[in-house]
Each structure stands twice: as structure tokens, then as C-alpha cells.
Length: 184
Length: 184
DNA sequence: TGTAATTTTTAACAAATGATAAATAATCAC
DNA sequence: GTGATTATTTATCATTTGTTAAAAATTACA
Image (cartoon, rainbow over all chains, first blue to last red; front, side, top):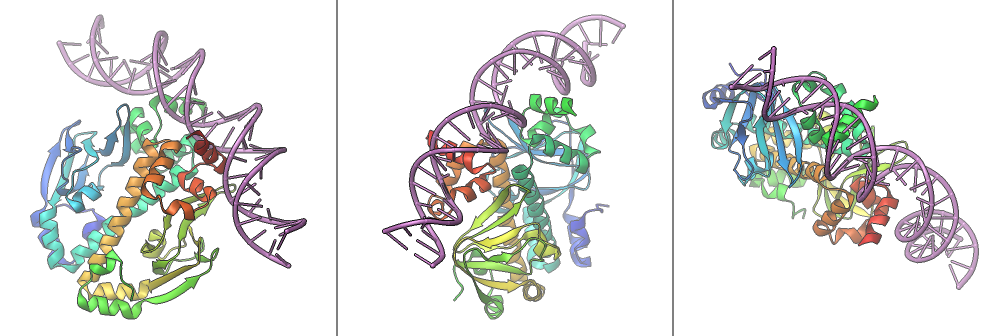
């Protein structure tokens, strides 16, 4: 039922059966929060359908860490692992269906099952690589280059994301992104 | 002998004895490379003494991902886990002594020992959190704010890092950083 | 369909940062 | 120590991005 996640491919038969029992389906409407800033993130979410953003806000602006669409695996890593208040919101940009597993259940699974621990390690490794790539881009590229880069890697996603959200992801204002697009 | 690393505190007695056998000491002079771009990163390095940077270069500029000093644990995550050519250099900024373990040995240890796998998971989790924090800062803060932030968190390190390297870390030019400092 | 609300674009100006060059200061090698 | 090398600062100008405001386009919905 909940296939198509690399994390799960890593699991052995036992762990796979276990995790299927733990996973619970949840649905979020567009605009609903999977997690609000200040709350403790108690789940890892497997997105089956829809689109979410992890973001935070200033007094004046919003900033987006990442988008996650179908087959994406989402959690607020430091809140989840430390069970501390999240600095980020997780918000549905479309009607979104997720399968999720609680930290309590996954901890149990990881304690009992080495392959689950390994799968989790691979998941956070992937998150690390994604964030390093993002840091590299932000160091090296200006806003126009980051925009082109995002288009190249996420061509299909762009149609589902507002310009404002894309600007928040790129770390610039909506006005600035509009100007960048006009130049091309 | 090789104490003071959180990663190791996580290990059980067996794994701890094993890893002590695997760890090898290496010394690098100032300016020597622990890893060059294009090489495959085959080790995790535990810095005992000294200072290194993970960096990459443009046609014209250098960019620094992170500095690692005493008790820091360094690897180029995607090169290490995928055993693919590194996009980054790892370079000693001071004479540096490291204990290192090869991926071959650590893989063996992780296969045999659940607590080693967990320790590795915690290591990459920490790396993820660090990189997320860095992305957040780069989205939200301008260069002057990032400079102040770095000073606040790494006051003691600043004296060991050249202005040029600090600028490369902040993603600005040396000239720009000099200007920022002059304003304060 | 028509009106309101929202999103995107355009414009004008301010602030931040990059690029280049030159001056000054600090460090290194002999 | 002395000269050469390297690192840092200062200055000037160009480019990028932010801010604000208004216009235009799109979308929502009654």
C-alpha cells in the first residue's frame, strides 16, 4: 500500500511488515498545518499525494526551506530527533495525503531492528546531502542563477508553486523574482 | 585515547573496542589537503588538534561550507556515502592531527553492531541540523547579520581564521567583509 | 457573468554587495 | 633586520536586491 519510498526499500521483511502496521493515513486541506512553529514534531510524514512546504517567518517575510511533493519524506529534523519545539512550520500547499509514523513507534522499530535504523540513517543522510547542495548554491549563485537552477531541477513543480513561494524559497522578494523573470 | 567525540559516547562496549582498533592517526601540515575535489572520500576524520575547512571554488572565488576544529567530525557526506568524486576540498588551515576510520572498516562495524549504526545515524543527523541552520541564516540574514551571528557563535575561532576565509564562509567578498567590519 | 480578492508586474528610488584598483599593514623567508 | 609576499583596508563605480507604491492580470466566488 505505502510503497514507492526509498526508505522502505531498505527495510528487511520483518521491519517492512512492522512499519506497515504503524503507518497511519492523514489528510490535510490546502492551507492546513502538518506542524506549527513551537510544536514538537512527533512524526515522519510520507507524502502520497499533494505538496507541502517547510518554512519560517520573520516580522516581515517568509522563508521556505524546502518543498516536498509525492514520494517526498518530510520531518523537521531537529524537532523530531530532539523532541523540541520546531522553529519551522510545515504547511500543505495543496490537498495532501500522507502516511505517517510516530517517533515512538519508529524508535521501537529501530531499537528492535537494525535495518530500520539503517533506513533512518539513509534518510537523514539524504537530507544532509540536500541541504549541503542548497548551501553550495546559495553561496555560489545569485538569485537569477538560483532561479534557473530550480527550474532546471524542478520544472514540473514550478506550475504548482506560487511566485511568492518560489521567491521565499530562493531567499528574495516576490518583486525581485518578478524582475528576474522579466529579464529572460 | 581518542575520546571526546559524541559519536563514540553512543557506542556500546564492543563497538567502542572495535573502533579503537580501526582508528588511525594522520597528520597534515598547514595547507595540505585531507581530500581534493574529484577524489573519493574514504574516511571519516576525527579532529584531535588543528583546523580544517570544507570548500569549493568557482573560476574566480572560493566558498567555504564549514570549518572544523578540535573535536569536530569531518567527512564529505555525499562522496563518503556514495563513494563518488567529491565536489569539495578538505584542507588543513593549521597543522592538524586527525584520527580516521575508513568506510570499509566502519561499514563492517555498522553491519555487525547496531549501536555503531545508530552512532553514525546521529552523526549525519547532526550534520543535517547544522546545514539546515546554515540555510535558515542565509535566507533570513544579510551579510552583516551573518557576520555578527558567526562571531557570537564562534568567537574563539575567529582569531584562527583569515578574513578572506571568513568572507568565503559568509558568501561575500573579502572587500565586502572588510567594509562590514569598518561600519561597526 | 461581474465584483472582490489575490497574485503578478512595473516603476522609482534606496541599500547592499561585487569588481577593480590602489594604499596600508602584517607576515614570511632569507 | 630587510625586502618580498600576503592580507587587509579604503575608495570608486556598477550591479543586484530590497522597499514602497501603483497598475495590470489572474483567480475566487457570489
